[in-house]
Amino acid sequence: MYFAALLARTEDGWEASDTELDDVETLSDLADLAREAAVEDDTVLALIEQEDAWFGVVRVDGEDDPRVFVSNAVVAGRSSYGAMLVDELIGRDDTDADELDDLDLDGTEDGEPDAVEDEAEEAGDAEPRPAGPLGDAEILSDLGVSQKELLALKGDALSDIADALGCTDMLEAVR
Image 1 (cartoon, rainbow, N blue to C red):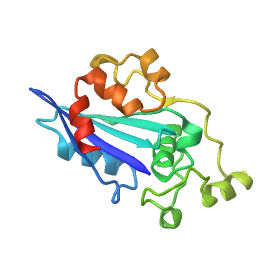
Image 2 (spheres, rainbow, N blue to C red):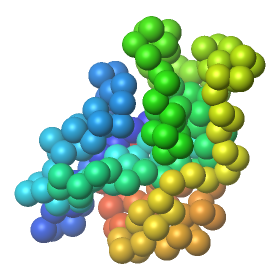
Image 3 (tube, one colour):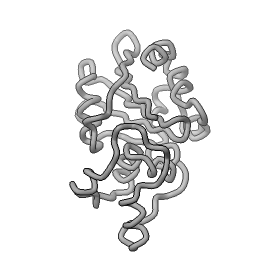
């Protein structure tokens, strides 16, 4: 089961809202969703986790390109939303419309590898995902979560991030 929330930075701190990812098929879709939640083009963080197996942070600052961090690329790559983030980070754009139709994006994935991905990897058509964290580990450094701290997060990482940002109560309210 997925949990996804948007944290929008405001003059008074952070505003949290849970978000449905049903219509999100690409990083661009997620960035657009984050921009809609932005207050005066300020920073928005899209936080995604799947049952403490992996978490991802997508940071959108105005119209800048989104910055992405995924805690465990291999595990995240076994779920639809995680695969979307990891594939963007490694530059894989071979997911065509037919493959997207085959993906189960309802948030009920159990961490099992995607059959389409397995077939592609067995055929040698896809590069394996890198092990461990992937992306911009400095994504939250200016907000109080250093690279070292981000890389050390385990378990309920989103709560730890919210603690550092000073918005734990808001995040828990939308959980």
